[in-house]
Image 1: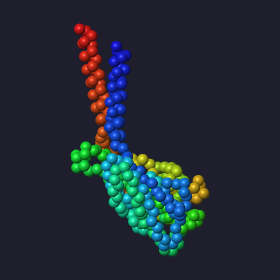
Image 2 (image 1 turned 90 degrees about the horizontal axis):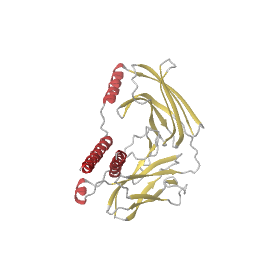
Image 3 (image 1 turned 180 degrees about the horizontal axis):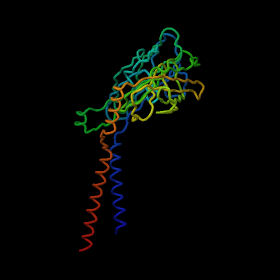
Image 4 (image 1 turned 180 degrees about the vertical axis):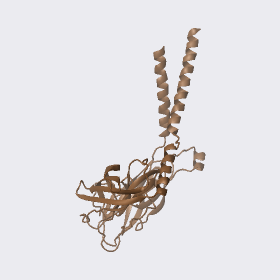
Length: 342
């Protein structure tokens, strides 16, 4: 009797957890997009645009939005400048990026980069995007991303139609423009600045690394460590590999986990980087100072982050479901035992 009851209890708990998972993942993506690759596409076996164009050339390219939903849906179509995220990845989603000082040609400004599109249920629509090359030779690569976002159904629509939308789905299609198929621009790197920086309410020591040329930097590996000025003792050390940088962009390479409390004083940042499996290599060393006021501010932020309470709603929901399942199982066992005793 005990073994059977335990098995049933486990089943009830498992089913309650499964029901939570199903509820959390009920929202489905009902659309997808396709690029229509033109004849001047350099690489045809790709799912993104890689176009060879001439100086000053204008061209219209097309993407297709397929709406598989049962209702008409609206979409935003933007063309964004490709940048580099602080995680060391190429980011196509930032509509208002910080422009690197080395950027000569902004692909975001040379395209019809903002459209609002409506697509009927169970249909598809071709969306034109105008692209214009700069006059004069474009040395290297211009890189951007076509981002397609589906509108979230608002609360009024939810009330009328009984639809609950929890997620906003989006696609990004890279858009690469160049005048030469062979890459002639060689990557290089600069160390722009070093020092403390707050990221997601944690304090890091960061090295701002710049790719100042119109070339995608691949297979980037960075090893950086921090010492007191004049000392060889490593206070922080971080290595990351398999990163990428967009052309003419920069990002903040962060050391540590954001919880290290640094005293006021003079420090030295050491950076070693290479790309394309060691083909290109760079070494940097830069001094900086943390003032007493800045050190106090950093310590306060770390303490606040350490003591901040976060609500884990998934854990709470799981516990409630488990308690409810346990209560149901106990009630059933008591009821069955009483019937057996009669």
